[in-house]
Length: 452
Ligand code: NDP
Ligand code: 2IT
Image (cartoon, rainbow, N blue to C red; front, side, top):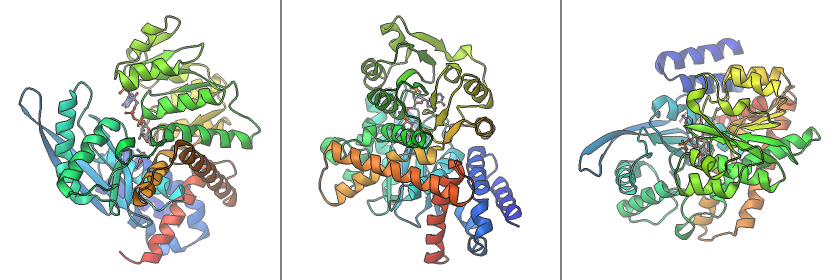
């Protein structure tokens, strides 16, 4: 009965959202893993919650015209998927990357519903973005694009309505231009975006929060198995916001991150990544990691072209812990086999859905601990909510205050996922625990709020 209903809803997605493979993948993982809850309590099927929760409350798609530096008008697509507001105003990032399409935004928005629920805070799920590529554009081009994007988006967002933030390709610079335009169009200086600059309403520690939170989550996970981070060899994919601050916190806590990557290649720095030059190259210089390898002659550089399509160099470097922190489906079955062969004990997802389903199965079957992204990377959005809280009370907390709250939130999320897995007799399976705990709060709220 439960299995058939889940299959029916998945068939509906396949029929009504053809070609949205990433959304289908995300929905399948959630719906299949919550089967123990659906079997235990009939109210979710009785109230058609599955049928309702896989459909966004609102999808906004718009044209973004902007003028490039040579005076030519360029056109991109803009998206905002307001997926679920049962437990709070819509909340979730904006992604600017050439691969972004409606399926990408829907998968991210769907994941965000359950992630935000897990934080224990009052935030609903949403995601947005554009197929605009900030790479290779001048600051002025990025500014004109952001202004044009916000000229449409501002109609749908607001501090109590929908609060976007950053994601891939959207950082401090983009949030600044978006915020400036929002303020100009509405005349309101309000927290309608998070990830803002410290001088204009941002929260200390938001920049670090996803990466730091991911490491705090890993710490909690290891503790249950009487292990810790000390001297652990770590590999971290990506070298953007999440990866950089994962590496920084790992170093602070005595682990040894030795490799990271970007869209062009991977660096393997056996003596340990130098965080200062990583930030100088990627965060400040917006350069490729090749520039890091030039500064450090003892660092090996592996060009992405030297690896087959279904494998990624970073996961073939021997490690104790892997932190996929770049993008979706970046850790495949071939990669998982290499991790197991090299004795990896934990895969801790910093990115959204970075591990393919067959890779997850393989890791779990081979006893590798697995921290799912919607729990492990929730520190970013949780700290965004702390930013909203500070904006609402017109205060600014210091770095330590925010960091202490973040640490506690990650501990609570871990405990919730871990205890819920146990409650449903899937001890140690944090995918089941996180999905059930995240789903239950939202679904119960949907039932309470009636047939809206
Ligand atoms: P950034 O844009 O700061 O960094 C992304 C990094 O991943 C870059 O190093 C980029 O390479 C690499 N990358 C991105 N796309 C690809 C691709 N298709 N193939 C290969 N490499 C790629 O993004 P974030 O660090 O913010 O986000 C990383 C992940 O974390 C995403 O999955 C995001 O959804 C997730 N996340 C982010 C949060 C946040 O607060 N920022 C919160 C929770 C999750 P290059 O440098 O060459 O561009
Ligand atoms: O995937 C995510 O959780 C984010 N990109 C952060 C969202 C947010 O609103 O801070």
